[in-house]
Length: 252
Image (cartoon, rainbow, N blue to C red):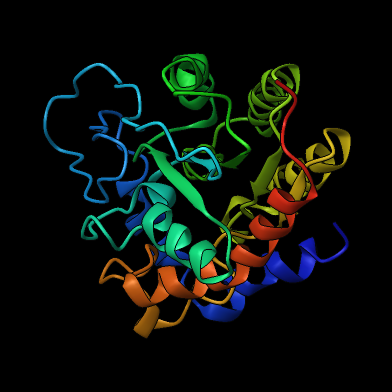
C-alpha cells in the first residue's frame, strides 16, 4: 500500500524503538498459553497445554460469525475478559446494528508459522463457517528477525486455506521497526498489501495505528493497548468489519 513508508516512519517518530524489542518480547514467548475463546487474559509463563479449539457457541440464526485469529494484540494480553479486541468489537458491531458473535482466536506469542499450524484445527472446531476472519500475525516474526520470505509464505498459506474455504478476510498489518534495517523493512512491510491484493482481502495496514507512542492508550510495557487503546483500534476497524460483513456472506 502506498502509505506503508509513512506508517513505518511512525516507529521512529514515536521514539519507541527500544520499547518495541523489549516489550513485544511478551508476544514472542516461545511457550504461550492459549486460553478459551473470549477470555482476554493471557499468561505466557506457565507450561503450555495443547492449543484448544475456540469455544464458540452456535450464533443466533441472524447473527454473523466473526473470528479474530492472531497473536497477543488479538488475544487481549493482560486485559480483563471483556476488554480485549473480540468482545469490544462485538459490542461495536451491535451498536452499528449488526448482530454478530466475535470469537477470540488470538494466542499470545504466535508467529505466522504457529498460526498456520493451528488454523485448520481452529476452523474445524467452530459451529459453522465464519462470515469473516480477522487475521493479525507476523509481528512476532519481525521481532525475532525471522525471514520475511518465510512470513510471506506462511501468511499466504493461511490466506490460501481461507480462500479455499470461501471465508472472507480482513487482514490487519504490521510494520517493521526501523532498527531491523531498511532491507528487512522493505521486504516485511510489503507482505500485507501484496497479500491483501492477491487474495482480495480487506486491509487495515497497521494494527497499532493511532495507539503506538501514546502512553495513555498503552499498558506499562509501552506496546500492548490498554482498554482505551483497544477502543481506539476497534473504532478504526469496526467500519471495515461492518462493510465486509454487509458485502456478503461466504458460500455454504
